[in-house]
Image 1 (cartoon, one colour):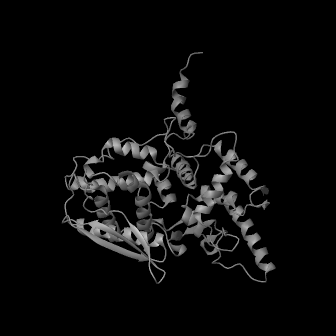
Image 2 (cartoon, one colour; image 1 turned 30 degrees about the vertical axis):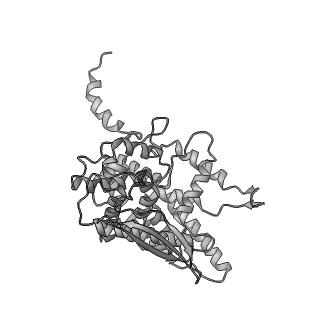
Image 3 (cartoon, rainbow, N blue to C red; image 1 turned 90 degrees about the vertical axis):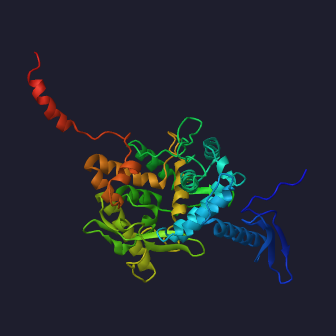
Length: 409
């Protein structure tokens, strides 16, 4: 039986050879839109880098060949994905870090589930099976797939977007793996006690030494709950952003990880994200304590605290990576045995602060705290309607006062 043809817009087996100069070359045959198979190669300092460069070149070929061509039902899904990725890379609206994150999620979570299917074969059933099996990047991967299949709908390759009619995957208990909910009042002491236990020095059998946590997790959680800032904004706060006498925090910077550069300081996510937040009294007290501690350390070295110094720094004095904070939180949550609090993430603190503000002061105040231009996003994604109700007994007492006057003895 003859070997089936390589689908248009895809490549065959990749061969890697070492060259005399020590570099490696990856070679494959790519089937172009005219049906012809042509040799494509790329080099790299290692077999892995050579293969990665070749795959990138093949994706670019697919994107260039299909950007202006209509998508059909029998178009291979990787070709459609390459067309979408080309549009993402050409966008001037998306930040470079967002483009990088989308491409990473596409390659790690989306393409492995549909790389052998045509556009027509991406059915609601296939989407549901894929989404249920995903362990990471669920929300982002689903959003990307929806955008990709949206291109197929525009070209009338499929009648409907299969992602739009597919229910979101749930776990074995019938719940979403990461519920979008705010913390309840009883969760706060549970998390506090878990962090207290996590902060205690403990002996590591693997490293054969005592382990002393260095991430100031308690202070970070307090700052996050008290301001509702994003994880990157929290990492970016420096002393010059704070006016402790006036209890104000100017949110101006955002730390984002950039491939090949590390953690980079940049502007906040949106133009409305640049805002001034009034700090709660307990947060001001915590920050004064941290400033006193930083001053003592600086004096011991014969220096002064710089306004540019990060408030929450690593042992090297650099801003904390958000992923390291998330890792520390995961370790701390495991210390809680009274209730499952594994669903709490750094973003939960932002949602909790927004929910409490919305419940007590209204949507406009909540959107202002979050740095949103309008109320819609705050209401749809941050307002946990299942949270405890606001105490409105003062108003209801007035309502019932007239009714109670006529009650029988």
